[in-house]
Length: 570
Image 1 (cartoon, helix red, strand yellow):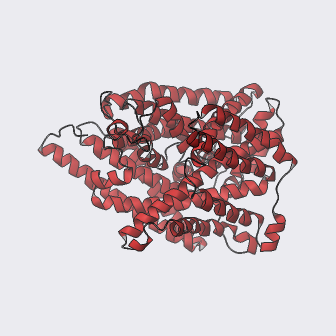
Image 2 (image 1 turned 60 degrees about the horizontal axis):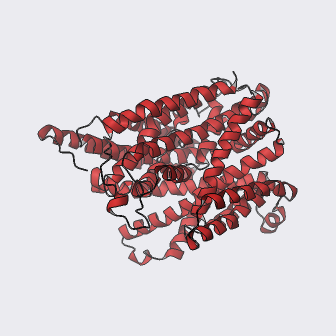
Image 3 (image 1 turned 180 degrees about the vertical axis):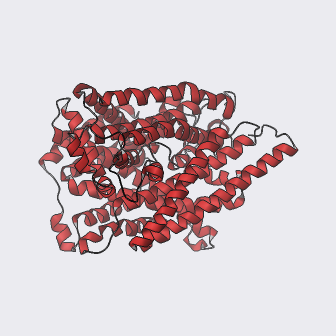
């Protein structure tokens, strides 16, 4: 089947979802009010609460939520065939992510811009705030560990990507100085920065950076050495002001993401590439079956709890009109779904013939271990259809993934520092509060320790596969989405509206996540992966806790509605 058909089907479904379903959500579920005074106006301070043009805010929101995860997850999941993967991307995006992201913005905006953690304590129960801290601690640990490994794998396999990936740092810092110090506009400098980044790609090809000598001197594998270097970088990067590196790199990434989608789709159309992967891979046998693992392997790109942190943490504080939330929340989800579509195309139509695909996806281990390389090779092929060399196209794809992963880690380490500070305060360790250097070091060392376990191959030790780490990340991500959907469901129900739009994806996610967690428990025990077993058991306990809290809160709200009709509180 021509890959172009998949583009038409997916983007067509996204259009219908936005045109009709998001309209239903806006009018009947969230009841958006154009006259509602948003926190950006009510609490305007020129720093966090700033009324922002909806198109600019859509760009900021989209860049913040779109990292490397909607590339990696689908690149692994096509192991089960392109049909289950694209079906979950479409249905998950339209009926899951759109509801979740849109709802998180609205719920937060209606509560003075409070984040989803604070709202969980207010809407569900005071215990839910503690639950939130624990879930987010697990999520951020896994996010940072996973993307540390992702960047290390790519640097080790594609040394030509090092120079452009590094040069984007001073470029972004110069843009930050221009925007913050000189109060200049951001569009032109960020476009210049993007051009300079792309100009560095062929330079990187000519001067690849290899660290084999350093690795030998340290007695470590190249990948393990890169992991340590990446986390050392994040320690320094996370200490810098957000305006100096994180925000200006987001400007570049937003434009880079748009360019990547355009060239991938254009390459598919010009080359008229065929999908060579099976619709359903009947050869996919073993413990990892697509029910339930598909739904945690593709989190970002279908529905991701991480988005609720951004939606309620920053986006809700900048909404100019409440009606803008539909465009920002729902369209942002569709944008990430489009990136997942691009990853599926690269890994099903860009790898050559059916025999090449069967070799690349011979097992789940091969699929997870080779996912990044498969995406890079596929994008390189699509760009070759446009007259760019496959090697240069592959470097372009690597730089896209690395810059996204780097931004995710910068944000993740910062958030982990905040979460550790809140946990320390909750546990009574008040001396740790305000100790930024110590908390940053802990925020780096915890995921670093976890990410080094898969690197045990350097010493011949027993490590665990990247795919196992990824499935744990997926379960925690979906658990976070479940918490956000619980808050949204109770909030909607309290306003005498139908909460099924949020309850259906909530029940589905909790069921699939619980199923996958139990299967993982058995597998980790049989394999003797004790660290993963303990982590998985902890996530199982949090899942059970969340289910109890969600059911209790919904039943309590239903009882209150039955005894006395609710007003329309904000």
